[in-house]
Amino acid sequence: MLKCAVVGMGGIGNTHARCYSEDPLAELVAVCDLVKEKADAAAEKFGVRAFYDEEEMLKAMPEIDIVSVTTSGYDNGSMHYEPAMLALSYGKNVLVEKPICADINDARELVRYAAKQKVYLGCDLNHYFTQPAFDADELIKNGKVGELVYCIHKVGFNGAESKYKGPGAPRWQTPYSHLKAFCAHPFSVMRHFCGDISAVQAFLFKPGVRATACDPMLSIDSIHVRFANGGVGYLMSQRGDAMFGLGGWWSYEHAGTKGTFCIENCVEKLHYWNIDEVENPSMASPTPKTTDYGVKEFGATFPVRIHAYLEDITNKVPLEYLRASGRDALATLEYTFAAMKSYENGGALVVPELLPAFHGDITRI
Ligand SMILES: NC(=O)c1ccc[n+]([C@@H]2O[C@H](COP(=O)([O-])OP(=O)(O)OC[C@H]3O[C@@H](n4cnc5c(N)ncnc54)[C@H](O)[C@@H]3O)[C@@H](O)[C@H]2O)c1
Figure 1 (cartoon, rainbow, N blue to C red):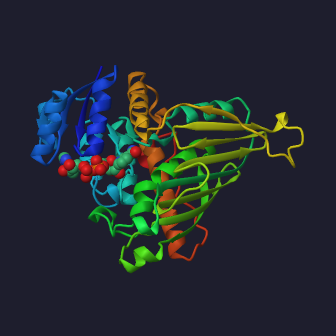
Figure 2 (figure 1 turned 90 degrees about the horizontal axis):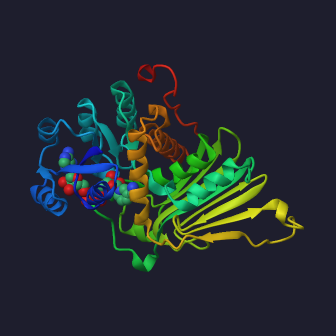
Figure 3 (figure 1 turned 120 degrees about the vertical axis):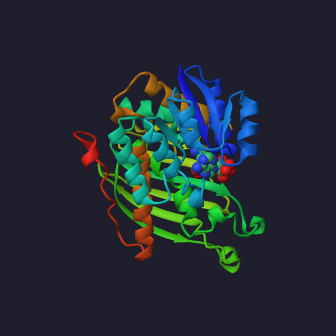
């Protein structure tokens, strides 16, 4: 069993701790927070040791195999780098929350250092650790979708002008906070199904109600991409400025030359249209084959994603085969920074920076 510790005992840290404590491959052994009350409360709840300083924990418990970094910071990620680097320096495997970092250079350094340390750096990109996504993977693998034509991903938070409550906590008070903190997820989903993104064009804006309130967040992110393998994609993400229509708060439509699938509400439903089963496809509006998984709670993604991380380490998969790796998370941040650059240049086309190569000595790149 892998011995696990969690650093940062907010809501999500407690979720990681619960997942480890309930997973047959893991044993939760410690929790850590700079705020004593938070560490103590979690330690009592889970029956493990509390620490208020990560390095003290790492020194006191050398048996720890995995450290979850569930701190936050501005853009919900500026406090990931230091605790993650520290755990890596002690040779620990690290599961960092998303976004991998708020700063792109920090993220590159983190990925480079994990490769040098030869440990498993994973990221909690949990949105494609769902049964609908696993079944969609099978459709693709079994040739039921064909060559990618397009994907359209709409994801974010339902809301309206009348529901707006003013600028959020300090972590949300930067222009790119929604793009950085949240769009790691949709970028990870699009990349999972379609491969690397080779070009990005972005238009970001906010509604009048936010502008009037001097809210700096660019809460509406409209992003058009081209994939390296061919095919195009569109991402619409907004943070409570409007209601999402068909597909709910999370819909992903993926159309190929042989068939189309659509995931609705992330965990809830998968629809599949097989073009060969429709008599007159150019005119018809065929009924899809729909699977309703009976799951409504997004929280169901956490134990599944964390179990996958534990499984990969238990099975000692080659480092480059780790699912939702630090490198995958770096890719989402490269796309984010490409989108920022595009926006700052009036929607110009931007080519994201290359990722570190898979093979050879990746510590030298
Ligand atoms: N994967 C998902 O679906 C998902 C969903 C929501 C949030 N998140 C991510 O989870 C992370 C945590 O979010 P949250 O809302 O629980 O944050 P939070 O701010 O409520 O909690 C973070 C905790 O970390 C502690 N902390 C900060 N630096 C520390 C350090 N160096 N050592 C020890 N403790 C430290 C803080 O005291 C705080 O208690 C964020 O990165 C966020 O983006 C992920």
